[in-house]
Amino acid sequence: MGNMTYVSESFWHDAVNKATTDLFTFGYKHIIKPNFVFNHRPDEAHDQMIEFCSVVKHMPPLLFAERMMLNYTDPILETNVMGIDFTNPFGLSAGLDKNCEMPVLLDNAGFGFETVGSTTSRPCPGNAKPWFHRLPEYDSMMVHVGLANIGSDKVIERAEKAWTQANQMQVSVSIARTNDDQCGDLDEGIEDYCISMRRAAGRTAMVEVNVSCPNTHVGEPFTSTSEALDRLFTALDKIDRPQPTLVKMPLNKPWGEYKELLDVLAEHNVQGLSIANLQKDRTGLEIPRDWEGGLSGGPCTQASNELIRKVYKDYGDRFAIAGIGGVFTPEQAYEKIRSGSSLVMFISSLMYRGPQQITVLKRGLANLLRRDGFEHVSDAVGVDVK
Image (cartoon, rainbow, N blue to C red; front, side):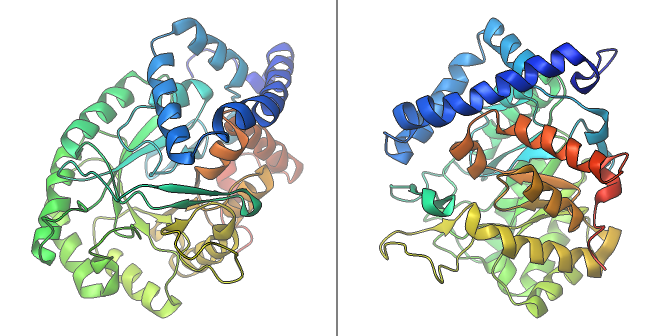
């Protein structure tokens, strides 16, 4: 932050920030969402949002306004995870900004970090559209993109540039296996990850290895057996990289199998876990049967919290946990942290609540931490896990 004062410590800046955030919340809910987002099919709305980001990043006055109005800063939220300094624990999870087109906007809005991708060694067209279906009644999106991206050589180049130019946001890149007709055996898959990892080495704050994309035609071979996972990370360990590595884990797996996978990862150059990917279980949800994909948001909240608690209880400080899945309120973010998450990621709440959601979450979390007598967000990590 340099010598700048924190918003939380300046009465007027704080008041303006709060008022504009409330105004943004109202405007997004009543004007922007119904008239500019939800009146378009979700695939189109997604494209328009990316387009909007690429236009606005060339308009300094708008970025300045965004930074002044939305970027809430507070020392209680600053944290160091896996050796990296974050101005706050909130990040955008992988899956939205696949080609790294949003960092300037997210940085000025005050995100602590962003995960771009997932990106693959070869450019990937993804699955047939539609990629998204909205399920507002469940605070969820049905996602079936299948790793569409322009290729990790280009995406990582953009990510490096974004990271070096950011005011304060850290940038992570998520790498996955290309989802196309060239997929071969496990060795081919391992080489695919290795190509992207070599490209990423030293060029981002963190790298996430996505072994749990539910929307690919080859399935998830690297989480189906612990041997396959071991082979993948034995190969990745040979690639010298300064930045910490996280592994994006699946949500739907029996705990016994889950533990076997984590025991493997504990033997390798892995510092963190992103818990977890999309919900595949539709039990109790009314969803058209022909809609393909995994569920984001609401249906993940409880399941991911339970997983985070189990992992934290059994592995403690061995892995830093980035908690993902259904974070719409400061209370839900706080629960993820108290369950063992050092970082918190979201996507759906950005889509359903708007760009000011980052401010709502940060301000709300800071209040909850102070209410409970914590001096820093890191002091609250895992306190509910006995």
